[in-house]
Structure formats: C-alpha cells, structure tokens
Length: 88
Image 1 (cartoon, rainbow, N blue to C red):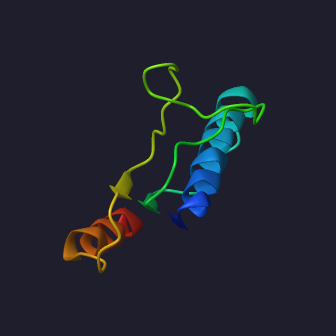
Image 2: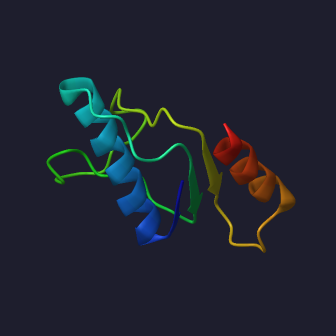
C-alpha cells in the first residue's frame, strides 16, 4: 500500500492513476493494492496540467482507499482497513 499526507496524497493518487493507465495500455500489474490519504488534494491528470475532479472526469482510483479529511490521531478503522487490504 501507499500512504500520503497533503501534497504527498496528491502525488500518491497521481501515481496510482498512472499505474492504472499503464495496466490498461501495457498490461503491467499495479504496484499498490490499497492507499491511505490524509488531508489530500485530488490527483493530477496524465499530462500534469490540471487536477482530476470527479464531476469533470471519468478517471477513478480502482483500488481500495481511505480518505481522512481532518488530521486526528489514526483511528482504529484506518488501521483495520490497512490490515484487511494487505491480507488480501
């Protein structure tokens, strides 16, 4: 899995979208099985010219993700989520 905070969440989400596009075009298996984002922004498009917004694009992250919008101590839910997905 991958964890990103703030701009790191944007970079992680962009990397995940890039890997998904590589899988669709080249058949290369994605590296990550899950992602945990803290206080992040949306990912960038493939050209890195603008952010990918759900109401403006059909691109979606297809792996299991957990988005924490406010930075509180890591909840038990997020920990269980990570453990569950990594055990798949």
